[in-house]
Image (tube, rainbow, N blue to C red; front, side, top):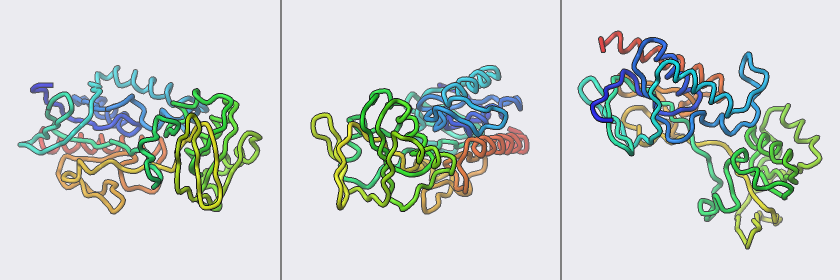
Length: 297
């Protein structure tokens, strides 16, 4: 992007990053939002969102599209790219992406999290070959099939219910003695005739033979048409460790460098919801604008 210098560069286009970009742009700041995939972050994986105040029900894709229209209204520069590194310069940050380098006076890191995978040999090589981390993306490939969902939290419950609506027989494999999802989701699962819940399952292998996927623990073997992994998310913050302290789990703590702010699921925080991510983005944007004002940048 040549010699472009932005007031604020937002890394990540999920709820936190989009909110940060919106609030900073509304303050009259020149903002670039960098997202390597589609805008919306983890919200895109939700077929039906019911916990955004003032909106009774909306799909993640529709919500993200509406948000993108808002960003365009305020002339936020949206860049589809991957940030490789950020280094400090004189009153500016040097941002290196896969397509080049540009500068910003302040940084908001809202780069979210990545899908956590079970500690099973060869699992990475099965992603896209009968094993998926996104039921919303890949569920249509499994109409009227037998599928397994690994996990017991909100994401796993939502995935299972979505797959069940497609006419699938769904088996939830949970490594605990209970589900950890919200009670409303748990009740829906327990009353879903297409869903079976198996507890205390500790998988030791997943393999593919022809078109079938085999899952095995100490005592049982499941043969299914597809597997959906939903065991949570992990931070992807190592490349920014010179800018922000990382905790033992790899989440962002306190920024090291003035002018750097964090927002969203990449932070150390007790709750990870769309509303809390948006709140983070608001605070980070206003703090970044205050920093720029204070430093006369």
